[in-house]
Image (cartoon, rainbow, N blue to C red; front, side, top):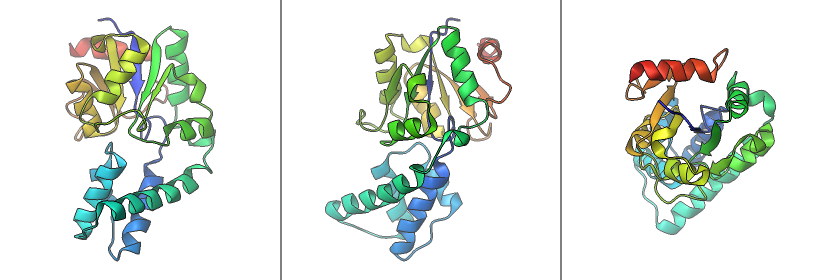
Amino acid sequence: MKISACIFDLDGVVVDTAKYHYLAWKRLAAEHGFDFTEHDNERLKGVSRMASLEILLEIGQKSASPQEKELMAARKNAWYVEYIEKMDSSEILPGAKEFIENLRASEVKVALGSASKNARLILNRIGLVNHFDSIVDGTRVVNAKPDPEVFLIAATDLGIRPSECVVFEDAEAGVEAAINGGMRCVGVGSPAILYRANLVIDGFKNLSPSDVFARLSKQL
């Protein structure tokens, strides 16, 4: 089994910005007169901004014109950016930086594949922007996960065949996207949610790439 590249989702895998997305969406919902719960927020994981807004409006049983939706999405994003501009390297999830550095030391290519349009800003804030050979974010893709576009663009950037790529994802839609792109996938989080991944881990702390690759080999 040859692994030449690893592609990482951002939110919930490298850093936990999901809490800031949630706070911003909750604030938008409150402004429009309804509550948005943490349970509701699970539906937004790995989903693009506009698709997330549609889900939010469905939950609140609200309708809006295309122009109003653009304004609402921009408002939510402005609040989100306020939150993430205060981030620093202390918010990198345990072991993630070391895991990526070990990959690079082993000459495995590393890419980011995220729906976030603020991915580069976040990577700059936490000091990891130069750890990735390719950054594919929401500004470069048209189709949201589970469409594999974001991961396939990353593989193309790296010059690596999809079959030699491993995706690290915390969202069900992201796991589906990896599978749809012909890539192996490591789920980061709950096996109950990420059961379609080739392997599920609870995080990167005290975990080496060789450990993961060996466990992946046993799944084949």
